[in-house]
Length: 392
Image (tube, rainbow, N blue to C red; front, side, top):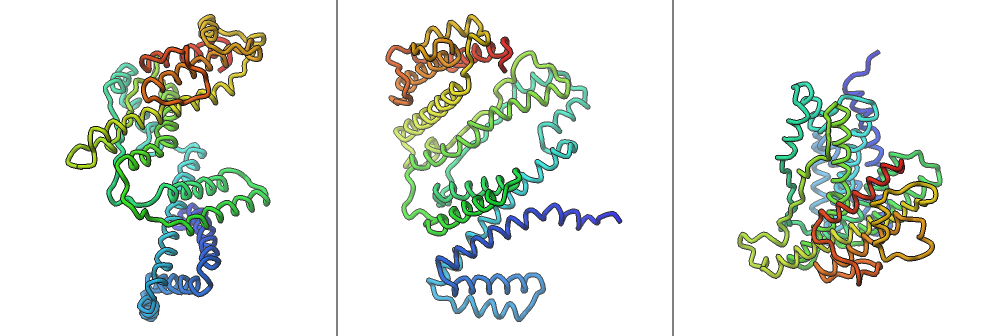
């Protein structure tokens, strides 16, 4: 017998319900341990009566709910509000993860690209006989600029947001990998620890943020959004273009840029001065340079290629020779020596731009990069050498 649409929807949402049950159980245990059995019982009574009233329009449940709520002391009411507030946040996390889960399942099933995706847009472009030249022309003229702004009502603390992201990552771990019993237990223990930390942390700031604090909070989003995801987005888009038969003789133009009003909103905010604007720009510059140096450090750790085993281009060898790295341990590792030289130049750039000591690499004799094109040229030499010698 064919399954009804309701049954199919229910099956698709089964994992979501299980995640919400897990988080609700953990939160309930936390409330019982931290606030006492009486508070937990009150929360459960409110929840059950609210469900009965909403689902069945039960008048008796409504009267019971009113009696409980009207009888709460201010201190008890605060605990109840916190309990339901945390549950709402945890349920939202589970729903976000379920959206990711459903998107992955859609792709794993080999289904047609979803509405609103770049893959769907390219299919339409191909069906409309758009040429490669026309598409490249479009990307060359396109400008997409997501802009971050500080909201005056955003009072949640960064520590709270960090713990919520930790819970999301732990839910994703349960979903994506088959875990052993011991691993599941460790995962649940980690979720319990994160939820306990949330419960024991004041969710609201007691003092108003300075503008420069808002800048720092905004920059915290860059590491796991723009700086990590934009390269992946461009790489995926280039692959999709190739799959749809659009010829690219060069990389995609840079059409997606980061924007921010935080620290630069000069439309009447008296706290945004020229000094704050300068500090915001310096903070962004320092953050990006630190990120690039960290990424270069990781790249150097990966590229242990030995020139006695694999070739390197003359341009790469020349770049390695320009480095101050003279350790005999690196004599036959031109990629690592080249990256050490790039890191030294980046450190010199950080010192020149932001008076920032950003790396352990000596940079006294290194020339700072004059602009981003010089850094891209050096990275391009590494990429070309890897590709030419079959190492990519």
